[in-house]
Image 1 (tube, one colour):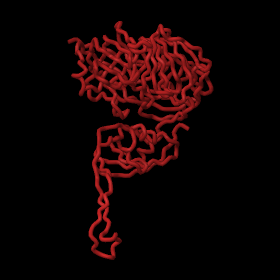
Image 2 (tube, one colour):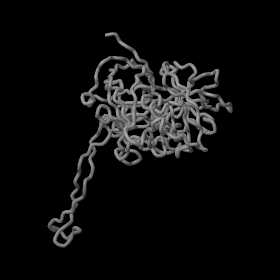
Image 3 (tube, helix red, strand yellow):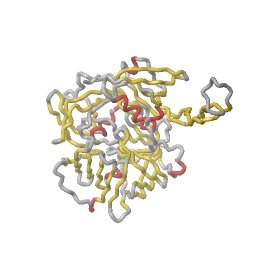
Length: 447
């Protein structure tokens, strides 16, 4: 069979394909629907039903065709029709990933349904983004959904509203900014400005709701897009073809018309990981979830416009991981828990004991075992506070600041590493069966 290569680049995002005429329609009388979502690591997770199977997808403005992965246990139920083998190329330095194109799938999102949609199924067990988010993720969807509706993304309320194009009534908004969208390979781009050394530089950015960072910029000395004096090498994310690394820094400000975000986070990915991302020669980078969530958005692909209004996250300070630790939810561990203490009155044998009339009171402890998530160190920044004290990749975190790690979600554990510089972090870890204790202070590299 002749191999077909479809090149894809994404950090939970970005792909380019040919397009069919299949369409989503809203099956209710209101011609609109509201869908709740989970906001995890600045990513939008929505429920998606494929051929009757309920799954969880990332809603990504930079994706053209649905990609399904992490489906080894449900592939038969999904009724994937393996009609054509392709290869996907994405972020990271690994080899292309084999996928199977499946035609005429029924996909339902809320009351919106498409009865004839192509999707791309990846059966590689190593391609599993769920551990990084701490919850099941089965795929990504974008352009096919956005092109058929006017979509309101309300980050403050964690819901999406979709409207049929001819039924939506546009309302003037005094505190909003409306911008034009430019499309390249079915991906939306926006014009913005970054301030470097007191100079405002115009940039063209992909709108990437499938990226959890704030802003990615491609280095360009001619434009003045260079890494600041204070920066560090870091893990930036996990792409389709492997991990992506680069330099993290801060910039004086990021601006979209009248909206200005000072001291914004910025990352400069290594060129080897983003070669396919630079096919659009006018592109300067990506605008991702940590900035997008600071707005409530109405995006209209048909009219090529986007409307922005401040969300409750607008003034949230930009922070970053000051520990050097990247965690993953990797399997489970068995935890012994005290169930209860049962009082037992036994016959009195000695008056020297503290006794009750006719007997002495003895407490019997009962225990139970429960299954808890295992949080494992999968990336460790060189010369970071965590590395300096001796922590290693594959260490399993058991306790954080004297509290069992299993009492937290993955996001809650990670959040400890984003607190203010000088904060003491105490970890108890399991290293190949040996229990060890570590303590370090968070360090601010960029301030």
